[in-house]
Amino acid sequence: MDANTGQKHCVTQPSGPALTYAEEITPEDVRSLEAFLNTQWDRVYEEVGETGETSFAMRSLLRLISDSAGFLLALVTVECPDTWQRAAIVREWQRLRSTAHEFNHCDGYDHRRWWHPVRHFDAQAEAAEHDRIRQAR
Image (cartoon, rainbow, N blue to C red; front, side, top):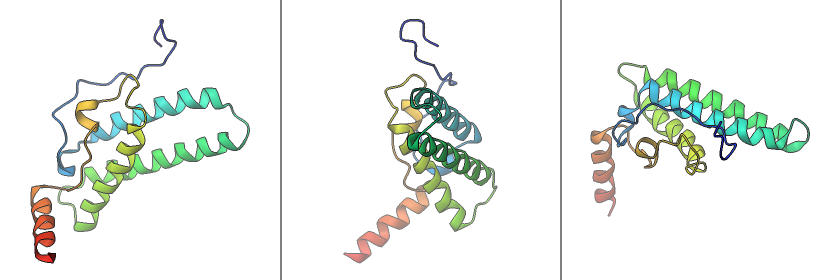
């Protein structure tokens, strides 16, 4: 907790290079993003309290964060992911990253690692999409 602001801090490890592709996402990335989101959730939930509709929505959000992070963690540990797994990695990372993006002003947000959207699993997938777009024109 910051003595000056009263805000909770999320301690993160020094960030690595900016993410370009989903194949670069590590289990540590998933864990740190989930930890950051949980810290923000705790902070907001303290203000919301434990009664009322907003409280129910907050608990649902926590389940979604936990489920998404757990699924993503399982996916990033697969050695040679299938096409559907690659797509799911991109989707789940974007889901968590975009949720965290709303809190980019908070301590612990890893601007270098989480700021830019990851739209493709790897360079080959990106090139294939660009080819499909060119052919469709």
